[in-house]
Length: 285
Length: 293
Image (cartoon, chains in turn green, brown):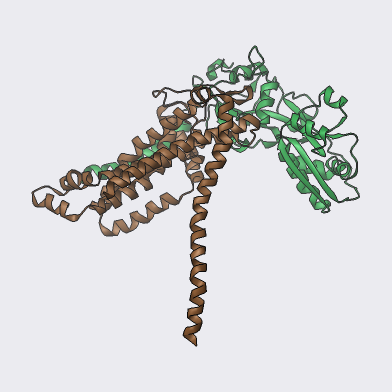
């Protein structure tokens, strides 16, 4: 009895050591199934991937494979892909780090520069909108966002549109401002509000997170002073009196594990991976 | 004079303190009541709008297109919990027998605090352990994604250990020594007396440990959602290397961006979970009653 116990104890570290070493030894096996990682329902990034790669069925409904792992949040997405050599996922270009590898799409690398010059097409614009021309505090805040300080505050999360913007020179008006809309723009807006507070402590800005369409509707009704959208404004919204302000671009990178030898995919291949047509890495040429 | 002051103080202090105690006790009850009211008020309208049958037996969960079927999540919760019980309970019971009847004192002084520590580790830390160690382990050993039913069961099996061991151990210690001594006197070996007499005598305590383990496993959220894959597919039991989504994971994954009926449907998911927990607690108190009688 005691012998068996001692044997089991001795085997345990050996076992652990074996499993710990077994992963890099094998190399990348193309016959392995692709682990598709997707964001959760309701995420703006998930909707953007659906639209940009056209991951839809004949009725226009999203048809991401049922076998896709769901990751809630960019951090979880990246750690999922970084931890699995056979995984594929996506995240904002601004969130990329060394633990994952971004693939080129249709031959164009997912970099901030390519997003800005428009050659990397897997991107969406970030817009703000006000009912009529912005004035007072709203105007000052938008001026700040488009200034050097505001554009610098966004670099962590998206691609600013103007790196050579002039410095902020507003009159620091006081008052309250309600900004609401797209959940994709919200984290950017939080950074902007933080930075704005530093230069204009007189203003109190409240952020309400919903989605792009609700943001536009509530900006129209006056519930929000400024609406946020992670898409261009629709013609109907502009004819209803909303004035759009383009503040930034967001590129979406398709990411794999650094060990994956693949470096490039086409838009169609990404679609076929996400709708479940390709299930193995060998199917991706 | 002095006694006069204390008497006067006491006549004020006692009723005041009685109120303080009553209010404190009521706070807990009130909290439970408020949670019930909020949950049912928030969840029932959604169930009504979706349809009870469609909600509970629907197999498609696509909130964007108004498909709200939570059967895959109900089944997912049951699989993962059953797996955790299958893996955790035998280990837990043997460990409890060891702690109560075999363990030498110096070792016990080390084991007990270690177990308490295991109970105190935050579930997100378990989740990280799962992602870093268990997921690659399952992927390399059994194949598949690594994020699967079996991974979640393994992790939950470890997480319920402190509950199972603690309650089983105290149940074993509550068995009168005469039973053990009688068995040994009749010629039984130490092992035989423990497994043949003491453990069966502590049966209802062991059952209670299992039920509480089930409660812990079914309610666990953070750690499970990090390793289970979270696919909303109705799985067969033999697909244990594929991912599932539990009820708890469904709520926490989507609450961030949910709106309107989607949000209400998530609260309704909470209602279903709450009913499960309620049943488990009823079972537990029934077992406890049996034990005290």
